[in-house]
Structures are given as structure tokens and as C-alpha cells.
Amino acid sequence: MFRSAQLASLPRSTSLCSLSSSWLRPRRGCRGLVPLSAQWHGGVGGLRRTGIAWAAAMQASPHYPANVSQPCSEEITSGDTACAGCQVCGFSFLLEPGQVTPGKPCTVPGPAENMEGESIYEIDSEDGVGADIISTVEFNHTGELLATGDKGGRVVIFQREPESKNEPYSQGEYNVYSTFQSHEPEFDYLKSLEIEEKINKIKWLPQQNAAHSLLSTNDKTIKLWKITERDKRPEGYNLKDEEGKLKDLSTVTSLQVPVLKPMDLMVEVTPRRIFANGHTYHVNSISVNSDCETYMSADDLRINLWHLAITDRSFNIVDIKPANMEDLTEVITASEFHPHHCNLFVYSSSKGSLRLCDMRASALCDKHSKLYEEPEDPSNRSFFSEIISSVSDVKFSHSGRYMLTRDYLTVKVWDLNMETKPVETYQVHDYLRSKLCSLYENDCIFDKFECAWNGSDSVIMTGAYNNFFRMFDRNTKRDVTLEASRESSKPRAILKPRRVCVGGKRRKDDISVDSLDFTKKILHTAWHPTENIIAIAATNNLYIFQDKVNSEMH
Image (cartoon, rainbow, N blue to C red; front, side, top):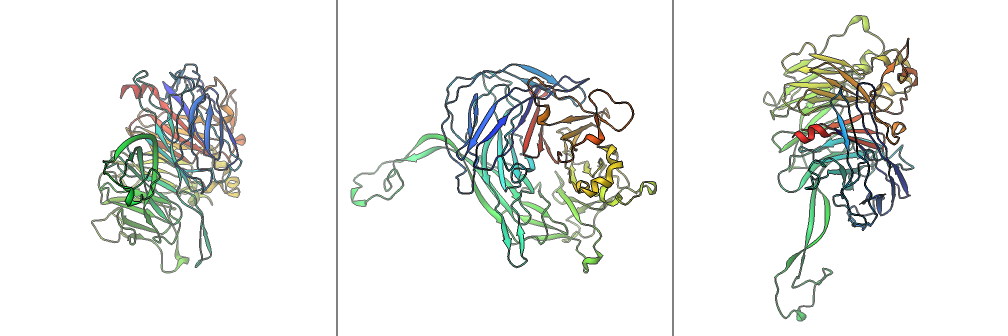
């Protein structure tokens, strides 16, 4: 049973913003998703939701502190119970009434109280078409934290609600944990180039202690952040007063042992390292090595290897820049380390090829160990062939045996031991093949879609247009198209599988290919590392879907 979709968009302006919540349910052959409604209000101080004692300091401006505690005493009411699911993709959703106490205060930015059975959180802001658009989504290695980055340079971290004794299966809601400004707009005076603050990628580091760490990058600069919690503060200093100022030593007549006193939970985010000046071109991907000591960053023409403790130098491990830029025929589009072997990594190119490199072979991996490339069918050759064959994302499977790639029209699964062709190819939106000319004119053909594996590598997911996203079951060869859209977010509505009609007879709920909205697109997706929980970014909205039945079995 799927605990429906949460949707949280990320407001940035200081003006009030409102949120409406709703639910999605599937159609024929699927049991569905269910929403209720809620209203959110936000300002300089943060967000609060009517009906739930929950607030979040959302850093309205660079001068506003990210960690602010703000009391909230809104009354909480219980919601209805609803259940739904999809028989095709295996997802099902559950809405449960919240067991809460009216008028219970909370502080920010600590974990939220138990809430009603809400599914989608939508927060609208006036500049949602700009700085608030989500540009990356990433779960940490346990799935307890989910980080999003936006075009305004801000990172918002969501934390999963812990399991309660009264409701042992209520775990699953993700609430705002912390938010901070990762990057600011800069200007390169030597090149007269403006460097925007947009977060291109976020990668979590494996947790070594109580603190969490993540890497975030814009086009040029990579930063390492440390996220810690503090719920106690020292009191009773001998040489300092309560405000932290030094006392007059003549007034100190006795010594006392300082003690730790409990305080409201505070989440602190501090920058630990700044890795700058490593790239001439725009950084498109970062990947943490399995040795937990190094990571690599890739731009259009080079890949650098960094040590997490060293910021002033990196090692160039791939350089495809030709001596004469007129001879340039391809660029690097994505790269990733192997999940188990620290010496292996793969990078993709705009020509649709994958190159597996072994760092044990040489310091500069210009010569790949393996080249994965599918021969082109001459009968399908067209003006757009090279554009649509460009790989926009590559992901190793959790087992390390396969690679998943996404180009404009398909997702492909490659076996590391088979270089000649992919072992599986899935059509994402083949109905757009006849629309390539218009897609080229409006630049949609250059959109970069991401892809994701589920925890067992049996299902893959990727996005499409019209706020559709696709899932493919590798075992049964079945697929499903679902929609994440506020238009379908009506009370008691069900998220139904969608079908795009190209021509001929049209069913009642089918949508014509000519009616697709190409301004609404699912570019960024993420899958929980062990459970059936997915995160879908749609412009400035974040949808979170959870398979409640399978979660209870873990």
C-alpha cells in the first residue's frame, strides 16, 4: 500500500506563498493513490501548514539565518484513511490518520510531528519558473535523508519520519530537515563570464559518524558540507557569562564544572572544503569513490580526481580536448565510479558511446579499457540521429554488473561483459520520433533526462514530458506511465497509468501526442537504495511516492 506522494516545492522569495495538497490514483488495472488537501503559508520566518504543527525555516534571503527555531501551535486534525496501488509497477499507497495532539508546539528545523494522511505538498512562489526549479535530487546511502538542489543555489534536505511505537508502520513521511544556501552567483572577471548558482549535482558521502556529509557543485566550484545535530548546550562557564562574554576575573571567586543542558534540536550545516579552480568547462557530474577517500568531477572535456581532504590540487584522469578545437567531435556528458571497484569508472559521450576506464592501467585514462557502442541502423539515419543518441545519464547497477543509460528516446541496460550492444532497450516516448523537427526548434531535443535503478536492480525509472514518468520491469517486461501533476491533484483523485495516443481510435482517458505539454518535464528522479520509495522532481515541485506494503516487510 503506497503512502501517497509527498510533493514539496522550494520557495525562495520573501513574500507569502501558499500550498495546496492533493492525491493521485491509478487507472484501469491499478488500485491508486489518494490525496487530501492542506494549506501552507510561508514568509521570511519560514513555512507553516494549517492543520499540522510543523514549520520550516526556508532561508528567504542570503541574509536570513538557515537555522532558526520558531514556535508553532497550530491545531492538528486527523485525516481519512485511503489505500491504493499500481499492479503494473508494484507500487501501492496508504494514507493513515495521524495520531496527534491538538495545539502541540514544535520548533524548527527539527523533525516534524506525526501528520495526517497527506500525500502531496505543493508550495507555489512567484519566481517558481526561475530560482525555485529543482535541478537535482539525491537520496543518501540509507535513504533516511533526501537532498534537492535548485537553480537558486539552495540545498533543501528532507528527513524521513521515524517509526513510532503507536504506529509501527507509519514511517515514510519526509519532512524538511534543513535548508542552506550552497552557492552564490559569481563573475569571472578574467573571462568576463557569469557563473550561475544553479546546483548541478549533489552526492552524499557514506556516513562515518553521527554527522552527515554531502558534495554539491555548480558549474565551477564543488563544496563539501557537514550536517550535524545539536540538542544540548553547555552552561556554567567559569570565565564566560550566559551571553558568552568574558567575565571580569576579579569577580570569579569559585570554580564550577560546566554542565550540558537540553535545548531545542538545531541542525547545523557548515562548509568543510571548497574545491575550486579545477574545471575550465561546466561541471556536469560528480561521483564518490567506493574507497570513501576520493571522488571525481567531470566537465565537457575533462575528468578530475580529487582527494576529499585536499582542495588545492586534483589529478586529471581523462582529457579529450583536441589540440585544435575545430577537431572536437564529442563531449563528456556524464561519469560515475563503479560501486565496488575503486579503480573502475565509466563516462558517456554525446555520440552515444560509453567508455570503461581502469585507473590501474595508467595515470591518464585517455585509452579506455572497454568501449560500449551500438551500431547505428543506416535506415534510421537522419539529421537528428546524433542529437538523440547523446547519452544524458549513466548509472551502475547496485550489483555492479550492469550499466543503465538514457538518451533522448530510450533507456538501455548494458552488461559490462558485452560491448557490442545493450542487453535491454526500452522505448520511453517513441511517439515523439515524428516530432523531432519541432522539438529541435524549441530546444526540447537537448533536454537531459536522468534514470534510476530500484534497490534490487529489477525495475528502472526515467522521466518524460507532460509530467509523465516511466517505469520498466526487467523481469516481466511490463511498463507503466504515471503522471505527477497538480492538475490531477484533486481530493480523492487516483493516480492512474496514462497512455499517449498517436493515431487511430482513442480511449476515453488517452492523451493525444499533439496535446503533450513540453514545458512540463520530469528530468530528475531518484530511487531509495533499499525500499520502493521514489522522488520525482517536476519544476519547483518534489513528489515522493512510497510502497507501504513492501516497506512493512523489511
